[in-house]
Amino acid sequence: LLKASIQKLNPGAKIISSNFSKGAPNEILNTKLFDFEEAQSSAGWQKELEGGTHTPETEEYGISSFVFRSQKPFHPERFWKYINEEYPSSIIRAKGLFWLASRPNDAINFSQAGGSLRLEKAGVWWASMTFNERLKYQSFADNREYIESKWSKQWGDRMNELVFIGQDIEKEKMIADLEKCLLQDSEQIQFESKKGFADPFPQDI
Image (cartoon, rainbow, N blue to C red; front, side, top):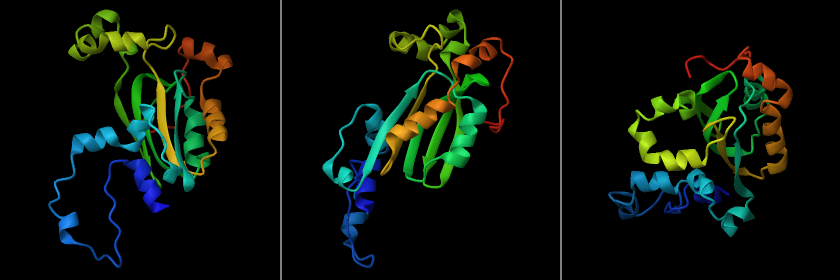
């Protein structure tokens, strides 16, 4: 199970088995095998975003992953309750971006590993700016074609994109629960009128 979990989290990692912490020093010291950029690009969550394949060994132990995507914002109170009270203990690792109806300008990083959850502001969405303001940024000019290919008339480039890796995940239930946390059609008027939503998330993210 541990080996399968490691392979899912980092498919390129070399796994060395040992008995009572005994191992050959040349296998673990100055191996020059670690490459930070390669580790970032080969991480299990990154491969899942890119549509990676699932190896039989990880499936044997019930280790699986999926990506939840939606351009609708999360309702802040419902999503806060979900991650604090209803979040599945079967999730080993999760990572991605999300946005809240109460903070339409902000892209927020979601990073969970075991019992640790970290939320932090990742920047602002291009949709929070006028077109002329976007043109002032080289990063927009360099990626304009890609950004505009993903653009939604209603939401712009705003997107919830979360990768979940875990053991015996109840995928359909989890997707249904996450969808319940999204802004509902009946709440759309409140969002468009900018009346605001109660927001229990820390204000410093």
